[in-house]
Length: 126
Image (tube, rainbow, N blue to C red; front, top):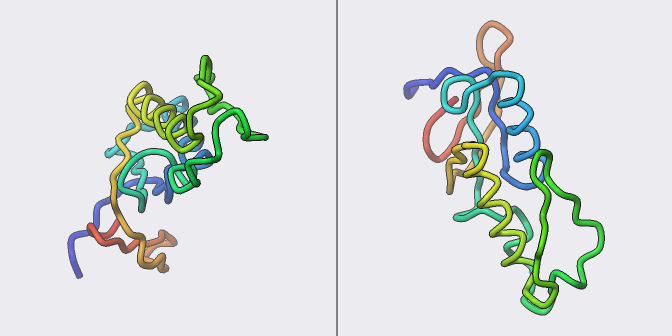
């Protein structure tokens, strides 16, 4: 078996839920890369939003909630939502130093020893 990187928490995905989780881990004193890691399949920030069609402008989006600790303000309603949300997520990751690793494919989550889980990925095991 390859070297297993030890962390307390593996966050799978850097969409709204994953980034919110990472933010709250930071707030409670967890350090990225030491205590937790965020793994994302996509090549860039934006969660599933980055794959929306260009005709879906930010002004047509209903129900986009701000991430904790940083509001989304002054977004151009005529810009594609994929661009607006992608840029917002990118700023968020940098502002809170979340150190998202991408692109990383999670291949399996298995029982490890001592009640811990093993997260097997395209870039190693945590």
